[in-house]
Length: 453
Image (cartoon, rainbow, N blue to C red; front, side, top):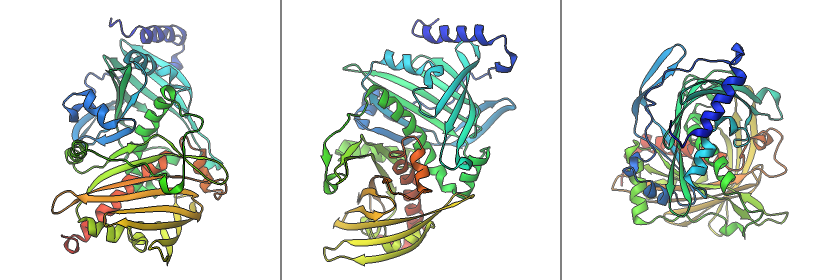
């Protein structure tokens, strides 16, 4: 027995004694010899320090090259030829043994992850265990509330805990935690995961993905950010109140060295063009009522157009209806300082209902390759962002999108559904960025002959 794993073995043994006599709580573990999940360190030649340096104090999210994988199920093995695993990485102020103590005890995920309310050990066999969770996300409209029992199978090995979905609204999926000790008592924590979003079950998730299939682009980033943000708050909780920034200075300045720029380009190319995301620590916005805590994320992507063509499109609000079908109407008002006020009406269809809302957005070009935007009214009270671009090569640009925001106190009732979700002030910007980038990429692909430098 590996002496670094005694807590899990004691936990599983106790659970077996207590629950083993109840056949309704017992489930057979599935044979799962090779998890077929790439290591988070694969793009960094196995060096945890290189990944940790790039992540810095952010949650870093990137994708791996497509690969074949297989997931055991109760009905046999499902094989996939081309799947893309998604990795989220974070440096925490804890030792590797402390992180292992936290993550190798799946029953204690209740209290760590805010949506989990119950956990039951179903079975154990060696280093493999099955745990059933109850996951609850109550919202003001009962029809849209989420209350499900989910069963996961875990396999513990050195510096790694692999996860297999047994029963869940996302029926098939794999994942793994890894943890790597760093100097000064810190640890790099990573989550690498993939789920088959084309075969969901259950009313809520099926209805959502059918009504908005583009949500599939943001789910992997959202899952990784949700999990690692929960771990971050365990070890590095936010201060009660930090430095308060005025609106003009609230957007994080995420600057990259030449080496970091090259690393990001390599991650994008290695993944076949998928974006790289940095979820930043929270910052405080100074407002007349009170300080508001905002979470920003910065996404980097390769778009096959020149910086000029990108800004002639993405920095001009009158083009938004060409990019987003949810936008129903835009009214524009140019200002003497060169900025533009956009009055935007949106209808967000969720299948069973449509959520209408109103955005008032002021956009301004700061330079040929930089533009900013911020809300100056409307239903989304706090919304700030910056768009930048630099040449990648003669045919494409490296685009950076920094965005953050959240609902105010007076948001419409249907929009306030979102405020009931965990990390509602963090996850929307992370989930929305891949959708924005995909729409922009598609737009320029369709207009390629017009935008060749």
